[in-house]
Amino acid sequence: MRTFVIENGVQAVEKIKSLEAEGITKDSIYLLAHDPKRSEDLTEGTHTHEVGMSNEGIFNSVANVFRSRGDELRSKMVSLGLSQTEAEQMEEQLDEGKVLLIAQENEI
Image (cartoon, rainbow, N blue to C red):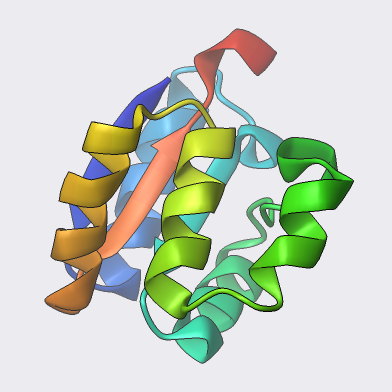
């Protein structure tokens, strides 16, 4: 798994193209932003994969409905393979308006 903190959608598109050139498919790439609408828009606009029940499991998916956005994001990051400490550090970056791109290489 590789993680990248990026500033905006343009950088996301550039990084995704670079990862695709390395053989990583869009189904293995996830984008997360603190604003849920921004996350949704970036995921739809770049045709990348959404963190869902298959990644999180049914319990965490349901629990996320009741969590704060920060808790939900950290849960999603951990489900994708980050440690709790890494997820906390990355969530701080998202608080500053940045976007997290996670590429799972083991799905190539």
